Image (cartoon, rainbow, N blue to C red; front, top):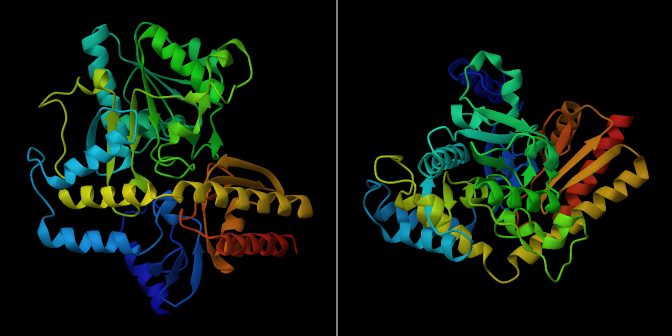
Length: 417
């Protein structure tokens, strides 16, 4: 038995099997590349499912982690630290939100957002205002609250009962939302780009209509930006990538000069926020964030000095001149290259997404596509039932985009042959 197979087999003897085992053992990463224990090099278009936003072993992150770990890693959440202040200031100063709650993951950020919305609705609208509207093909996490607003619950009855008073509307269909919303609705939670739903972006007009509906009925609008946030769409925050104007509500076209970002009331963040380090946050406008008071929610690890120092470093890197413009430029090159492959082979049936969060549907079974890409030196992931998800590090360069496109083209050709 090879060392690789030994490590895989022995690991899965001891691990609860929540994932199917990959046939390789990963060893290290550098920039946009990852290497397995046999030394094979992969261009990483998975990035830990949109996590490694600055790639692997980024110098600024390594410096921050080493220096902060030597100073202070853990302290009770009731204590202020310079690191927590800096991270909170950066988040508030560069967003539409007023208050921040730090967590450790996307699921925890969503959980905090749901609890905050229900607490706010209880205080604002009454004890019976508990309904939450989510969307078909959504994914928000795996804890009970987040799983309850994830449409996958419909195929997992063995976890029932889920939290009550959750209803599902159709994504990008405002009529289906209006049919559910009422004075007892506490919150509507939506992904600006559905991740597990096949990398499907929201229509800006749909988000604008959601915003108006929430304003009219006094409903908390939550954006789940866990996967789409922090530079992934070519803007620091995902909501900034979706602009609309008042004329849109009357069926008119979007007027670029009058269009503004569609702001949520509460947001859930994680993944790219820590660029590989476990950190997340829930942020809110003051009206909603003030619903939490001491004793209503909390966390042991959330907001620890090390995580906050890393988050601050990541944000500062992303706010450097040209960083976000680079993401948009690389997105255009990637999509153009995929369209060229599509025209040449007719093996790509659809290309969706925004920024460096791209979904590709093809005529081939997704499992075979992922296996062939891995054989040819590329890591990627699956979204939904049949979509190839491409979420490379945001620091990727033109020649690396071209390298990945060549691997995709080669892999499709080999699958066809």
